[in-house]
Image 1 (cartoon, one colour):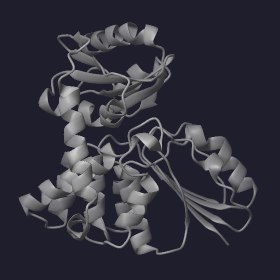
Image 2 (image 1 turned 90 degrees about the vertical axis):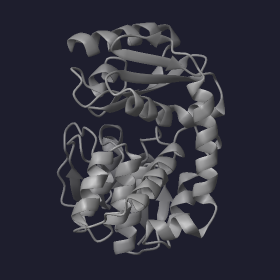
Image 3 (image 1 turned 45 degrees about the vertical axis):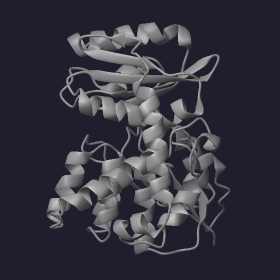
Length: 322
């Protein structure tokens, strides 16, 4: 029997899988990629009797591959927090999906494990820009050291920063390599103190963010701000971090960041306030994207539609209509 671990390469996917394997150690084949590389189950060559664990990959883009795996007699455990569409039922499938806005996949795995490795769930929640959720979990565990929370937040945000890019050549570390580096450590502080990974990510993230913050907005509206970054590796790495930082600093407005994929496509990362009259996923779906209420994105927006997207975002933030 072969076991496969399939996971989004961002902080949430890595920390979800890390918790699971701390509780259930096993030799596994890893299948992952950059954050936007979501349709991962199609790469899994599992056959009858094999097992697959899938964490933090949206179900709609993986449904056909999931059904094919189940039809071949593969057992699948699937945990995610994105909108699932139709939920399949099969005796070989264990499916946990929760789309609540204060939940991420690391939180769901923490729930499955009854808090056995909650520290890494906190790191994952910080990385998924769910700081309030992370702090609630810390309070529930009696973790009150503010300096520790600052370290864990930085770790989560740096793990998440590392996942953004068109392909792994844009990243500081391949996600599978970063997961393997975490594997020996049940304590985030031990990982932080163990080697160069966080320091290298911290320095790269700061340099990329400094460059990005010097780029003037394309739209600087009353309710929305849209930035278009240049066609550079640093732009592709920092797109998610910049969107999160901007909405944290200016929480009354929506913030979108666009970077070129190629001459025909832009990648867009969108964040909206929790009390916004329009959801991030609703705005992005209109342009072929998707996501969650406060965080969503578009993988392939034609550059000619960027102005239309900006207008729709400003209108949605003002009226609730897209």
